[in-house]
Amino acid sequence: MSIQEVIAGLPKPKPLRLGETALFLDLDGTLAPIAARPQDVRPDPRRTSLLEQLAERLDGRLAVISGRTLTDVDRILETCVTSVAAVHGLVRRDPDGQVFRTPEHPAMARAVAGFRAFAAQDSGLLVEEKAGLSVALHYRLAPRCAGPARACAQALAAETGLSLQEGDMVEELRTPGARKGDAVRAFMAEPLFAGARPVFVGDDATDEDGFAAAQARGGVGVVVGATRVTAARFRLADVEAALAWLEAAS
Image 1: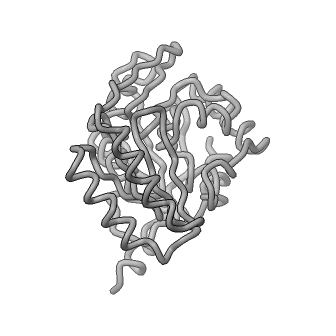
Image 2 (image 1 turned 120 degrees about the vertical axis):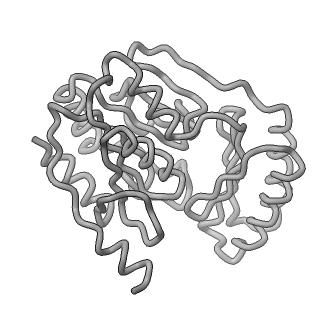
Protein backbone atom coordinates (compact mmCIF):
# COMPACT_ATOMS: atom_id res chain seq x y z
CA MET A 1 0.00 0.00 0.00
CA SER A 2 1.38 3.44 -0.94
CA ILE A 3 1.80 6.39 1.44
CA GLN A 4 -0.95 8.18 -0.47
CA GLU A 5 -3.34 5.29 0.12
CA VAL A 6 -2.48 5.18 3.83
CA ILE A 7 -3.05 8.93 4.26
CA ALA A 8 -6.25 8.85 2.23
CA GLY A 9 -7.45 6.09 4.56
CA LEU A 10 -7.26 8.22 7.69
CA PRO A 11 -10.77 8.78 9.05
CA LYS A 12 -12.54 12.10 9.00
CA PRO A 13 -12.72 13.59 12.51
CA LYS A 14 -15.97 13.52 14.38
CA PRO A 15 -17.75 16.87 14.84
CA LEU A 16 -15.97 19.13 17.31
CA ARG A 17 -17.46 19.36 20.79
CA LEU A 18 -16.59 22.96 21.53
CA GLY A 19 -17.38 22.82 25.24
CA GLU A 20 -14.32 20.67 25.93
CA THR A 21 -11.97 21.82 23.15
CA ALA A 22 -8.98 24.12 22.82
CA LEU A 23 -8.65 24.70 19.08
CA PHE A 24 -5.35 25.40 17.31
CA LEU A 25 -5.46 26.23 13.60
CA ASP A 26 -2.79 26.67 10.98
CA LEU A 27 -3.58 29.28 8.32
CA ASP A 28 -2.20 28.57 4.82
CA GLY A 29 -3.43 25.26 3.46
CA THR A 30 -5.84 24.90 6.39
CA LEU A 31 -8.02 28.01 6.64
CA ALA A 32 -6.98 29.49 3.29
CA PRO A 33 -5.89 27.87 0.03
CA ILE A 34 -2.16 28.18 -0.61
CA ALA A 35 -1.46 30.95 -3.11
CA ALA A 36 1.42 31.17 -5.56
CA ARG A 37 2.56 34.33 -3.76
CA PRO A 38 2.08 34.75 0.03
CA GLN A 39 0.74 38.28 -0.41
CA ASP A 40 -2.09 36.99 -2.60
CA VAL A 41 -3.94 35.49 0.40
CA ARG A 42 -6.50 38.07 1.48
CA PRO A 43 -9.28 38.45 4.05
CA ASP A 44 -12.41 36.40 3.45
CA PRO A 45 -15.80 37.24 5.04
CA ARG A 46 -16.76 33.58 5.48
CA ARG A 47 -13.50 32.73 7.27
CA THR A 48 -13.55 35.82 9.47
CA SER A 49 -17.16 35.22 10.52
CA LEU A 50 -16.45 31.56 11.26
CA LEU A 51 -13.45 32.37 13.46
CA GLU A 52 -15.38 35.06 15.33
CA GLN A 53 -18.16 32.57 16.06
CA LEU A 54 -15.71 29.86 17.11
CA ALA A 55 -13.84 32.22 19.45
CA GLU A 56 -17.10 33.15 21.14
CA ARG A 57 -18.39 29.60 21.46
CA LEU A 58 -15.01 28.35 22.70
CA ASP A 59 -14.89 31.11 25.33
CA GLY A 60 -11.63 32.29 23.77
CA ARG A 61 -9.89 28.89 23.57
CA LEU A 62 -8.89 29.48 19.96
CA ALA A 63 -5.41 30.18 18.62
CA VAL A 64 -3.95 30.46 15.14
CA ILE A 65 -0.46 29.00 14.81
CA SER A 66 1.15 30.01 11.53
CA GLY A 67 4.45 30.43 9.76
CA ARG A 68 3.40 33.93 8.76
CA THR A 69 4.29 37.09 10.65
CA LEU A 70 1.89 38.42 13.27
CA THR A 71 1.14 41.43 11.06
CA ASP A 72 0.27 39.17 8.14
CA VAL A 73 -1.97 36.89 10.23
CA ASP A 74 -3.85 39.93 11.50
CA ARG A 75 -4.19 41.28 7.94
CA ILE A 76 -5.64 38.06 6.57
CA LEU A 77 -7.87 37.33 9.57
CA GLU A 78 -8.85 40.95 10.15
CA THR A 79 -7.56 40.75 13.75
CA CYS A 80 -10.48 38.48 14.67
CA VAL A 81 -8.23 36.09 16.68
CA THR A 82 -6.33 37.39 19.71
CA SER A 83 -4.20 34.35 20.53
CA VAL A 84 -1.68 33.89 17.73
CA ALA A 85 1.67 32.18 17.39
CA ALA A 86 3.49 33.56 14.36
CA VAL A 87 6.71 32.66 12.52
CA HIS A 88 6.16 29.02 13.56
CA GLY A 89 6.11 29.96 17.26
CA LEU A 90 8.97 32.46 17.44
CA VAL A 91 6.40 35.21 18.12
CA ARG A 92 3.40 34.61 20.38
CA ARG A 93 0.54 36.89 21.39
CA ASP A 94 -1.26 35.61 24.47
CA PRO A 95 -5.00 35.86 25.25
CA ASP A 96 -4.40 39.23 26.97
CA GLY A 97 -2.70 40.65 23.89
CA GLN A 98 0.83 40.58 25.28
CA VAL A 99 3.44 39.74 22.63
CA PHE A 100 6.50 37.56 23.28
CA ARG A 101 9.26 37.57 20.65
CA THR A 102 12.43 35.50 20.25
CA PRO A 103 15.55 37.67 19.75
CA GLU A 104 16.82 37.88 16.17
CA HIS A 105 19.71 35.64 15.17
CA PRO A 106 22.85 37.65 14.22
CA ALA A 107 23.26 35.71 10.95
CA MET A 108 19.77 36.45 9.62
CA ALA A 109 21.00 39.26 7.36
CA ARG A 110 23.47 36.84 5.72
CA ALA A 111 20.67 34.36 5.06
CA VAL A 112 18.48 37.05 3.51
CA ALA A 113 21.32 38.17 1.26
CA GLY A 114 22.03 34.58 0.22
CA PHE A 115 18.41 33.85 -0.67
CA ARG A 116 18.08 37.13 -2.57
CA ALA A 117 21.21 36.41 -4.58
CA PHE A 118 19.88 32.96 -5.45
CA ALA A 119 16.40 34.30 -6.32
CA ALA A 120 17.87 36.81 -8.76
CA GLN A 121 18.43 33.99 -11.25
CA ASP A 122 14.72 33.28 -11.85
CA SER A 123 11.70 35.60 -11.77
CA GLY A 124 9.57 32.80 -10.32
CA LEU A 125 11.60 32.67 -7.10
CA LEU A 126 10.24 34.75 -4.21
CA VAL A 127 11.97 35.74 -0.98
CA GLU A 128 9.78 36.42 2.07
CA GLU A 129 11.31 38.09 5.11
CA LYS A 130 9.53 37.43 8.40
CA ALA A 131 9.98 40.10 11.05
CA GLY A 132 13.75 39.63 11.19
CA LEU A 133 13.33 36.12 12.60
CA SER A 134 13.07 34.00 9.48
CA VAL A 135 13.42 34.16 5.72
CA ALA A 136 11.68 31.94 3.21
CA LEU A 137 12.55 31.09 -0.39
CA HIS A 138 9.40 30.17 -2.34
CA TYR A 139 9.68 28.25 -5.60
CA ARG A 140 6.02 27.42 -6.33
CA LEU A 141 6.25 29.58 -9.47
CA ALA A 142 9.59 27.98 -10.39
CA PRO A 143 9.31 24.25 -9.55
CA ARG A 144 12.32 23.54 -11.77
CA CYS A 145 14.42 25.27 -9.09
CA ALA A 146 13.40 22.90 -6.27
CA GLY A 147 16.68 21.00 -6.10
CA PRO A 148 18.99 24.03 -6.36
CA ALA A 149 16.82 25.93 -3.85
CA ARG A 150 17.16 23.09 -1.35
CA ALA A 151 20.91 22.97 -1.88
CA CYS A 152 21.19 26.73 -1.40
CA ALA A 153 19.19 26.56 1.83
CA GLN A 154 21.24 23.66 3.17
CA ALA A 155 24.51 25.48 2.46
CA LEU A 156 23.29 28.67 4.15
CA ALA A 157 22.03 26.70 7.17
CA ALA A 158 25.46 25.10 7.58
CA GLU A 159 27.18 28.46 7.22
CA THR A 160 24.93 30.49 9.53
CA GLY A 161 23.68 28.05 12.18
CA LEU A 162 20.08 28.93 11.35
CA SER A 163 17.46 26.19 11.43
CA LEU A 164 16.36 24.87 8.04
CA GLN A 165 12.64 24.23 7.80
CA GLU A 166 11.15 22.80 4.63
CA GLY A 167 7.53 23.44 3.74
CA ASP A 168 5.25 23.11 0.73
CA MET A 169 7.49 24.33 -2.14
CA VAL A 170 9.43 26.58 0.21
CA GLU A 171 12.79 26.48 1.97
CA GLU A 172 12.96 28.51 5.18
CA LEU A 173 15.84 29.56 7.40
CA ARG A 174 14.70 30.54 10.85
CA THR A 175 16.11 31.65 14.16
CA PRO A 176 16.48 28.54 16.36
CA GLY A 177 13.84 28.46 19.05
CA ALA A 178 10.18 27.76 19.63
CA ARG A 179 8.22 25.65 17.17
CA LYS A 180 4.51 25.10 16.72
CA GLY A 181 4.41 22.40 19.39
CA ASP A 182 6.02 24.79 21.86
CA ALA A 183 3.29 27.31 21.04
CA VAL A 184 0.61 24.71 21.78
CA ARG A 185 2.24 23.93 25.12
CA ALA A 186 2.53 27.63 25.98
CA PHE A 187 -1.12 28.29 25.22
CA MET A 188 -2.24 25.19 27.13
CA ALA A 189 -0.40 26.58 30.18
CA GLU A 190 -2.58 29.72 30.04
CA PRO A 191 -5.53 29.68 32.48
CA LEU A 192 -7.93 30.30 29.59
CA PHE A 193 -6.85 27.10 27.79
CA ALA A 194 -5.90 24.88 30.75
CA GLY A 195 -7.91 21.69 31.18
CA ALA A 196 -9.35 21.66 27.66
CA ARG A 197 -8.68 18.99 25.04
CA PRO A 198 -6.31 20.36 22.39
CA VAL A 199 -7.16 19.86 18.73
CA PHE A 200 -4.55 20.96 16.19
CA VAL A 201 -5.49 21.33 12.52
CA GLY A 202 -2.75 21.84 9.93
CA ASP A 203 -1.59 20.76 6.52
CA ASP A 204 2.16 20.45 6.05
CA ALA A 205 5.33 19.15 7.68
CA THR A 206 5.71 22.29 9.81
CA ASP A 207 2.50 21.26 11.62
CA GLU A 208 3.69 17.81 12.69
CA ASP A 209 5.16 19.25 15.89
CA GLY A 210 1.76 20.73 16.69
CA PHE A 211 -0.02 17.43 16.08
CA ALA A 212 2.39 15.67 18.45
CA ALA A 213 1.98 18.31 21.16
CA ALA A 214 -1.82 18.14 21.02
CA GLN A 215 -1.89 14.34 21.07
CA ALA A 216 0.57 14.18 23.98
CA ARG A 217 -2.04 16.10 26.00
CA GLY A 218 -4.94 13.83 25.20
CA GLY A 219 -6.04 15.69 22.10
CA VAL A 220 -5.79 15.01 18.39
CA GLY A 221 -4.10 16.18 15.23
CA VAL A 222 -6.12 16.66 12.06
CA VAL A 223 -4.21 16.89 8.80
CA VAL A 224 -5.66 18.74 5.82
CA GLY A 225 -5.02 17.30 2.35
CA ALA A 226 -1.68 15.63 3.06
CA THR A 227 -0.01 13.03 0.86
CA ARG A 228 2.87 12.22 3.21
CA VAL A 229 3.53 10.34 6.42
CA THR A 230 1.89 12.18 9.32
CA ALA A 231 1.42 11.84 13.06
CA ALA A 232 -2.16 13.13 12.73
CA ARG A 233 -4.90 10.61 13.42
CA PHE A 234 -7.58 12.20 11.28
CA ARG A 235 -7.74 13.82 7.85
CA LEU A 236 -9.80 16.37 5.98
CA ALA A 237 -9.52 16.43 2.20
CA ASP A 238 -8.86 20.13 1.61
CA VAL A 239 -9.45 23.67 2.87
CA GLU A 240 -13.13 23.58 1.92
CA ALA A 241 -13.60 20.37 3.91
CA ALA A 242 -11.78 21.92 6.89
CA LEU A 243 -14.00 25.01 6.85
CA ALA A 244 -17.16 22.92 6.54
CA TRP A 245 -16.05 20.72 9.45
CA LEU A 246 -15.41 23.76 11.64
CA GLU A 247 -18.76 25.25 10.66
CA ALA A 248 -20.48 22.02 11.77
CA ALA A 249 -18.96 22.15 15.28
CA SER A 250 -21.43 21.58 18.10
